[in-house]
Image: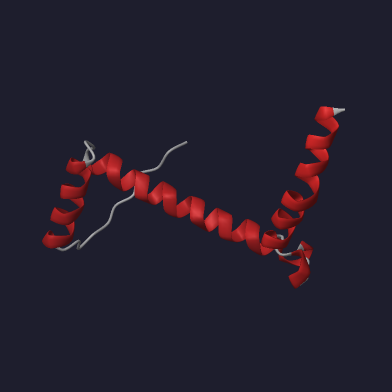
Length: 87
C-alpha cells in the first residue's frame, strides 16, 4: 500500500534547488523526493538494527586490529599456501 505525503510552506528557493537537482539527475521532482524519503527511511532502519545488536558486540583487543590480522596473513598464511602448491 502507498500513501501520499504533502509538505506545506516550502520556500521557493528550496523548491527550486530540489527541482534543479532532480533535473540534473534526469528525474522528476516527485521521483527525486521519493528517493530522498526512501533513503532516510533506510537510514532509520539501519540505526534501529544497529541499536538492537549493540549488546551483541564485543570489544576487540588492540592486538587483533585489522592491520595485525592482515599482516599475520601475509607473513604466515600466504607463505604456507605457496609451499603447499609446490609439493
